[in-house]
Picture 1 (tube, rainbow, N blue to C red):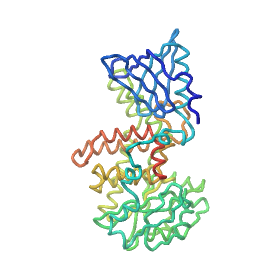
Picture 2: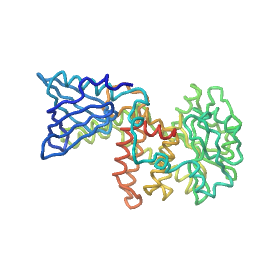
Picture 3: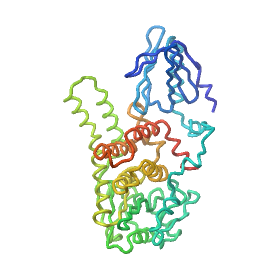
Picture 4: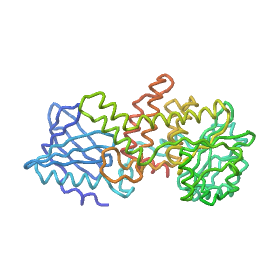
Length: 443
């Protein structure tokens, strides 16, 4: 793609940049295929602002006489204002930003043009992998094995090439079980609890449909998960009513008659449009300038964001209790198995495993449970709280995770080996470069 055709005005002099908590700066504004660069030209200042165009969520332009103002609202919730001399220049810059900030093709985004000179990608993006995870837990090897059934992503497009599955289940059985799960996401191991040998496995919903279809291979797979134990728990992140309704569209749940040793627990967790709207209301509350505490608290409550945080933490606590206190293995799924399932399995591991509370362990956990587990960052992070675009697949599930981790850090600051600085960096980088994560998952 030729980015130059979308850039009619590449740079403008005498632009004024206004940002909260910073004095106004006058300098030069430059626009490239991926970035907006502002350089302060005053001798007493060397300030520069480099903004990735992909990080822009919405812009507002206002013309006044022969000049104009562009207000840029970013996905990481920053707000910048540019006062640009010349109406034509202002309109050209606004048009370039609008076009280049929402490119449809993944291959046109910045990660595919960035060429580091002193960085080996293969070395840096290997904090965790199924192979490494499996080799570190010798206790697993008797009952669990590493399968390459998904070597070419043909069984499940959102799983890594290698997965950890019960030793007694062969690859042919896995392929048949995958056809019975939405998106091919058959149950795979994501956590082994060393204290008692119990595990957490996750998947997507079974495709039982209105006719209550069965899959013997899927039943055998789940039976092998709890082999030697009296029962296991299924935590379904939908309400019982939602699970019933899913059958009408081909989805469903594990029936008691077919999965007799599994007990199903429903814990409804919001995602999708309702969670995105909750974030929008939260940001609106934080931007309230009335200085009225009652009004602000009312807006905060109406956003329901903290209710989502509470639900996520309590569901993760339930999962941890089932494994740690009750001594039972747990299967976690909702519908697709790429959002709330990852959220609560991550939080539960953070609660139970001290290594996951170190910086290295936490980053490895995120790579294992979000990047390799197929969370669709590109779609979920396509827009943030400011965009006027129609909501499609956007949902701030990963941001909700970071908020939940922050709540744990605030309550137990000495239990975690990292601070809110890491969480803020992750939130910012995820919003700016969602395609980076997808690209490296495929490398």
